[in-house]
Image (cartoon, rainbow, N blue to C red; front, side, top):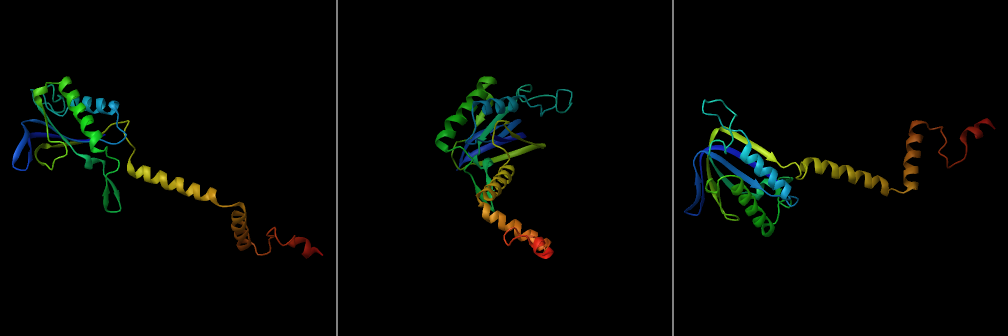
Length: 207
């Protein structure tokens, strides 16, 4: 699961001409659910959102208070595009959880957040809708967070996949092909060396 957490002075979500949600000071959270996410991921993300110390205390000391400590609001917006993997220049979203599964899963995250905090301070966008999200970032302060049990970095996965393909290609070569390649390398290195196919060259020179 990937989230973008922004400390805001205000944020609103509109669909068409209708304002769906708005908050004052607090956090705007863009949240992308992956196909591999479980309840463990959800619990981790909720805990971090509510307890991350992104606010100052009453004396102005920075990074000491969480959104719950200050009784601020949280606006969550589902955003599957956070699970984007680029294929060349084209975005691919196959790692995002399908909408029919993601909607109840996302709703359970919101319910968990409301249970853990004050339900009236947790706001939401409109799942699956084309939304306009207006954010007045405070700072700016933006934190990117990935649940530890979520998928690996796509770039690392791609690198591992290429390494695996090279290994498989090497294994698929027959012994005769590998022998010919090795023999060709030895021949280039020493024209007088035996290739193992035309007899013992050194013995012929001795006779």
